[in-house]
Length: 116
Image (cartoon, rainbow, N blue to C red; front, side, top):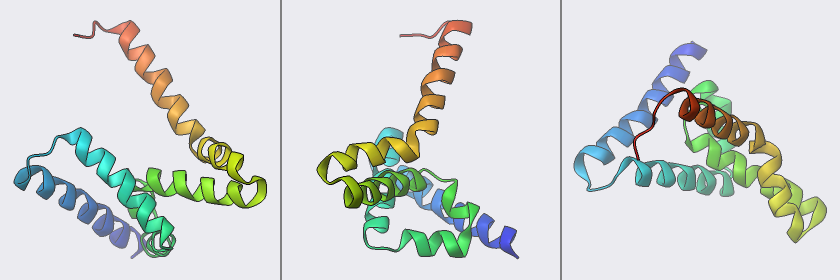
């Protein structure tokens, strides 16, 4: 049952994104940024953790989880280290994802001929 719930919740997040792309004049970059902000806002109100408990991977795999991780880490470190903890927390929880994106983007750019 957990797999079904994860599949449905992740699919609903993707469905919302597809509907926004189909019916509003936005680009995929706008949608991605909007989903990151939505995940951060939901985490700020304490709702995203409840969604993760309910949906599991259906809530942690989509891009909304990146916004959740950014804000969650910033808030946790801000409590311990104050204002400087905000930047520390953002990079602490998301550094693996950011580093992977940079590394694989570089590797693909070296192996293939990107068009400008």
